Amino acid sequence: MRTMSLLLAMAVTAAAACSSPQNSTVANNAPATTAAGPVDITFTTDPAEPKMGDNTFQVMVMQAGQPVNDAQVSVEFVMPAMPQMNMAEMRTKADLQPTGNGTYRATGQVMMAGNWDVTVMAMKNGQEIASKKLKVAAK
Image 1 (cartoon, one colour):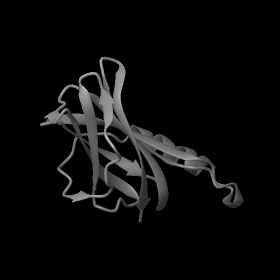
Image 2 (cartoon, one colour; image 1 turned 180 degrees about the horizontal axis):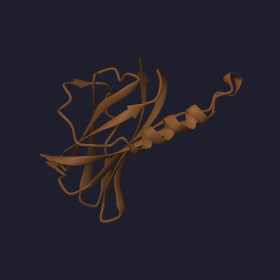
Image 3 (cartoon, helix red, strand yellow; image 1 turned 135 degrees about the vertical axis):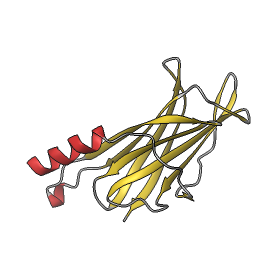
Image 4 (cartoon, helix red, strand yellow; image 1 turned 60 degrees about the vertical axis):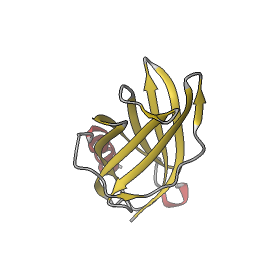
């Protein structure tokens, strides 16, 4: 249990700007809509299938067909608890940094192989403008 706590602590602190991802991992959900128009979020990782350890996360945020360059974007990976395996819920979050043209990027940790629930959140001025919930399989 102590090792898992250490892994969680290490994973939460992993978020830094990094090189550009080359591969897409998950298709978009339908775009969210705000007063300024529909917001579309595209999420990709490098490598294309996330692996245990460091991965690059990239998000593109578009609103009404235009890049959103002034958002606060985060990606949170959650693996639900597995009581049958005596394993607690795992959670890791990365705050992405803007790189231009509506693109945000960071390096973050995936703590183990398996199926993860991913939430991508885009906020402006303290208000959520869009979020996407995705499923990602890490190897």
